[in-house]
Image (cartoon, rainbow, N blue to C red; front, top):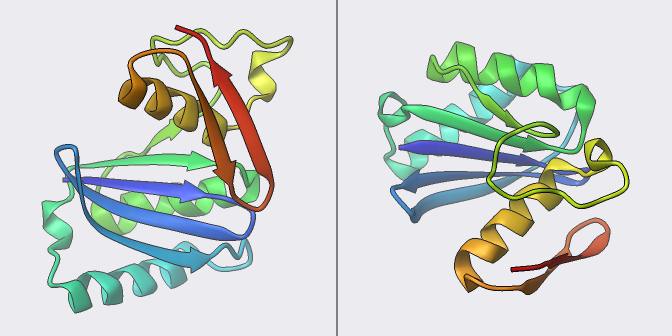
Length: 141
């Protein structure tokens, strides 16, 4: 099972995927002052309450737009799930070129949104994300 972690400025969203199906999901406040241990205790409690097995997690992927959270989430993945996390960010191979003036400035959230939008639509689409900031991304076919 895949543990997907989406770290945004206000909330950190966590999902467990069984194949393409979202099996469980939670939302925590993003607090860069918290430690990996604190986030780990939160997650272990959520897993236990849901009857989910930590040992079932065989991969962790992280999309973060809050750089101070990256080492915290990386440590969380290694310490509590015994997995090396894959960080989505500039340079990751998605099969989709980022046609922006400076592709390295495109946030992980927008990369994931564009790839997921195209995967669902299978053609050109506009992806709207109503997060802390509302963003519009146009994906060409």
